[in-house]
Length: 321
Image 1 (tube, rainbow, N blue to C red):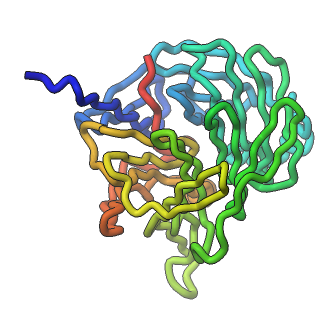
Image 2: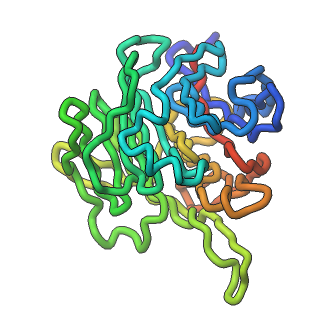
């Protein structure tokens, strides 16, 4: 008899590097199979980022759209030229124009959604609401690593480990909690993830490019560990998480999430993809090789590799239909 008390959560699919065709490959972890989806909207020199099962595309003409890969529904977004500081932004490398976007809700479910992005070489914040004709900037001089939407509020995490609440009504940010000093030696890459109603901050160690050996011009980047903290925003209490239980974290370039009771993958693990922008910019083949599974129990890593990409790296996409 089927056990109806146990609900198996759907795993995200891994959108693989593009191969300059109208087809995009999505890898299904649970079955070990690859699905091909016709996505001409994501073809060629376009960047894609993922949130709540949607992609945001940015092409070389600086047009921006929301794209639902499973239905191919497209929503036009304000043009890049409507960013407040566009005249300085346009001189930046295309690759670094945007590093993260997050939706407050799924546009398939709600027409009242807000979209926030981290953009520009100095990692600023901007947002647009459904139907807006231009982007609205958040007043802040900080440099941000990640953003997320948690219990009706946007939060941003800066490069020093400080969590900021983003008020889109007045366009301001306010400090909420600061990563305790001495908890790690170097903040190389930081993530915000909601997990079973909890607010997590994850530190990725070894994400940045460094010399392979002394007196060598070749670089290597290889993740060697993760630190996970649960943050109580009401008391600003940080608690180190040693065991994720039945949860699995999926981290990577632009897209991070938590799944509980997932079938077809390991529990108490972190699945990670490449997340070093420098590797995509400096290498002829691009990035993609720093991928694997991190086991919370003993800190071991099993390496995986799904192919290089000079433009759009492998990226987690939630299944939403």
